[in-house]
Length: 256
Length: 324
Image (cartoon, rainbow over all chains, first blue to last red):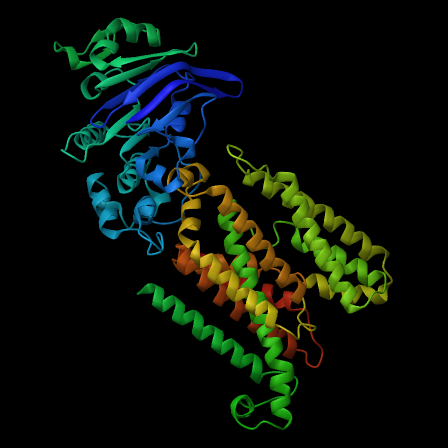
């Protein structure tokens, strides 16, 4: 159970997510939506334990995130950041194997990560054919899939993804969303997903819950079917929308 | 498998370079003289030359090169910058200023060493003090670290130039040797060898964490690395290696920057292999360069820094073209 209680986030003097409280359970897929600069990335960093909230507390199974041992936290929550902080010099295989670090046994990761887990993650992300390519030589979409594979190799219980669909072609957008959905099903090894999404087509189809962050520093959360309505999304983005199909979960597209 | 090949090549190069360093010099010895002097006859001129002159010098060169390469690998990982080398923290500048100041004042060797050490430690203290903000949520900004090291080096360079300009011309030559790097006075390498082994072993223990640092501080932290502790270990480990190397041979250039890249260009990226390979490469490279510096114009000794550049630049250019 990943819980935010009455948090407030602050970056460079601006306040976000004031008073937001959410509880993410295994099996759930949360979509975080909101206009640019509404604090989505900051929230995800806070959920990953990379930043402390200005007020309130984030806990996993009752344990405050900022007090957890780094490796235990890495096994509980893993993040796919919006972009790479640094240039990576090695191959895609090496990049993905780094994700195994928190799961390695004693002599931690000295063997360079679990080979089986690395290959499995590459296959799940559909990038096994890129394994020996230099990471820097990959296209934007290929890189995004390799980055996703690294998160799969980490195999945290809570997957936090910041704009996971960026750079992906339509086929791989669906592929990634299906992989994430599959991770949240599966019996006693259920995972949970919290992802920042930027479109109004996919959330209704794949999210069980949604957190809508407005530009004013507050947010509302609830079941996807109640939150992701045409009225709410139109108000959130300030654009006219129309349903993309007849079914209620079909999603929306910008109105003609 | 590739790891074995790389390490075997490194060990072979190390042995070869040490053997060459024992064989060549102002007094020519044959290979059988060297082997006899090492293991057999315990008296005679070859024995004394080898045990009292060439062996300490060869090991000093090897340790110095290994330390510089080790510091280069560590700092390139810390700063995530391909241009980082062992001197990026201003250590060499501080040591140079101290050493040249001592020469100007006519102080002896011991006082000169103390002054160089003081200068090096002062540089480390300033760079650390200016940039490090401890505590949770306070990241150590490595770009500030890099910039402050560069700025400090510029300041030291200016003061060093000032000393060179105003010093009596009789002293300038000794100063230039110091600045170019020179192993003529390196006759007790034991401490440096021990430090090299200690730091290499310590770095190997954190090799996986060094790999993760390449992903960036945030991602490394999200994967369970205590980044601040790791940064401190790297900073002080690299600083200790550089100080020891500078105290042994002055500011020998090129090794700390280029040896890690030379190993990387052979396809080695993981630190668990990169670290020992770079140490062996740096050690054998500097041993070879120092043998050249001792012998090419013997009995006149030349600053080894000239040869690290003269040998290293074409080798690196070749590796770079081959890769392209």
